[in-house]
Image: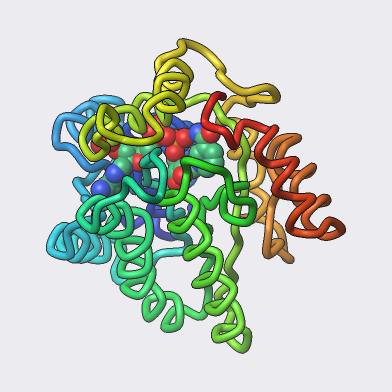
Length: 288
Ligand SMILES: NC(=O)c1ccc[n+]([C@@H]2O[C@H](COP(=O)([O-])OP(=O)(O)OC[C@H]3O[C@@H](n4cnc5c(N)ncnc54)[C@H](OP(=O)(O)O)[C@@H]3O)[C@@H](O)[C@H]2O)c1
């Protein structure tokens, strides 16, 4: 690829978590649309695969500062210190009751879903300030504003991302850097598969008072195909990413899927006790 030409003619974007799901879909389609996509993945095997598919691909593990810094340095060298957009996307969900979460389990969840995102974002903000332009898109979730039982670690990580992003938007309001949150409900991807791996690694289901609920939850995590009503393909998220990148006035928040619209609406009008009733019926008992 001719670096000089692409730098002058196409917008550049760094995306995390491109090995599967939403990150892969967004990377593939933005590349097709002419963006210069820096596709990053946690594992070298996925980086190699992405390269064979024609991506400019790099290893980036969000739990590791060296990995973040090394990859950002390499990319900025290629672009002469320029990057138009950042799509913070790589993350996973650790299911499990709050009382079963060890400090270590929470630490890894936050290292990936929160600290890595903010560290990466803070590396890119000075570049965007310097070039006088930038779009930062955070892939949050409906679970970034509506809590569900047995999703405490993931809920808290997405609530944290929402808090950081709302704060950053205020702090950067006098700069040309624009921030958007995307709040998807159920999207088909490897999310449940990866959540099951995290569950097996960190939760002692056998010795938990929630053992029975976990059996139902594991059936849901192992179920092939969509496990929740209103599941959409990752292209539904892509559509909002494109708006956040290309609109003159990107939105602060993009809802994706019926459950996000529904809970967003209900949360504005209902009391916490009413919300609790609805959220526990909507799969918050771990059974869906
Ligand atoms: N699917 C949904 O229903 C849904 C709903 C709302 C929000 N989201 C959000 O959408 C985003 C993408 O998830 P997805 O649905 O596409 O699931 P996915 O298919 O499991 O993709 C998650 C991606 O994150 C990467 N990742 C995990 N840990 C990482 C780390 N330490 N460093 C760098 N990358 C890491 C994974 O890499 P590996 O393959 O190496 O593990 C994978 O590429 C996440 O932020 C998720 O919270 C998803």
